Length: 309
Image (tube, rainbow, N blue to C red; front, side):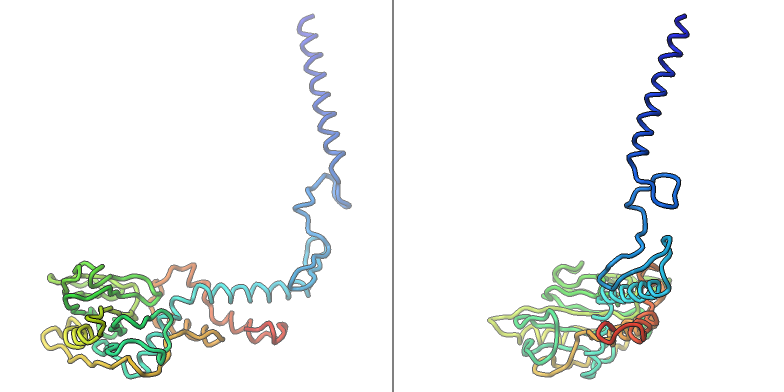
């Protein structure tokens, strides 16, 4: 008798749960053509109005026109992502090209702002109360490169082709403002590391080199003289007979070091990608930089002129 009562209670509970769930199912809308309720939030409407136009679907499948419009938008968005991710490498490329435009083409060539910076050259972050010494170098061309930094140098640095830190020099560097010899090793270098150097490895061939000096009694003369006479840059292979430094004044002359903001930008980063080792940036970032995709977006006949790159 007790068992029967227990079975009756269990059956009653089961019936109540079934009725409750049935009520929920009935309360939910069953879309036309479906047998079970489907949350509206996961359904694809027949028409969606967006900022790129009206998108049309049939049973969740886009029309031919909608598919083409969506593809154009995705291609454009890829171009935007490439631009945002490519700014660091385009900036380094522009600086290197700017240096070359005034004859600073080799590792032992260097620009010194002996009369400070002014409004003639186009720079993004330079200021007018710092003495600069800057250059660039190609480790594919030079191999391991030595940079001799004099005592008393302010903040200095080497950055790779993606504007990433390679090594600090001067006061924030390992020489702590006392000066020293730095050895910059190229990508994939497996040779010996000689003693007597602050050693750093760069993941790229092209690198940017900059030193900063301080004014003395409000004048740039002391720092300019120090950089012009005591900074030496040469391949390790030529340490016994280094080339003479070639100093170019960076004051009072016009040249550009700022990357492009039109389609030339994509050509600039393409130059970088073609030059550097394939692993100097990670695969995901590199995969976002197919210049051919950007060209398709710019030249596509389906994109109005006002919306092209």
